[in-house]
Image (cartoon, rainbow, N blue to C red; front, side, top):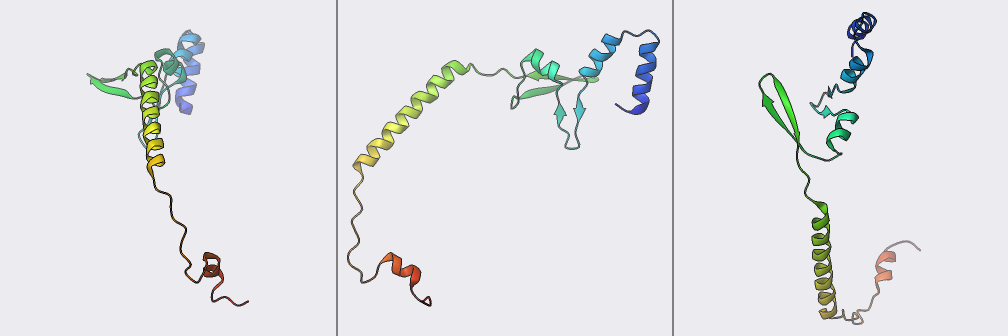
Length: 123
């Protein structure tokens, strides 16, 4: 809120406008950032159950814009389904690992891996 708006608001509060009503309006104001991101006031987010990462729809409604929170899916069944799928994938991985052949030890090549790191270096 700019200095002029603040002084006008103070003047209005002193002239009889309900201070609580004024503060309620100020608390519900949102600010648009330079990247055109909208910050939702905490009181509004709590009232409508909006959390970080949630999606909201913005719909034109004449001269105003309506913000409509999208419904979150019921996480109870979703979590159980995801755990079931995770267990299935884990079992498949265990079966794959049991079926894998063991890597054979390399035959005698006349050199070792350690020699590769020291070869050509001054001793």
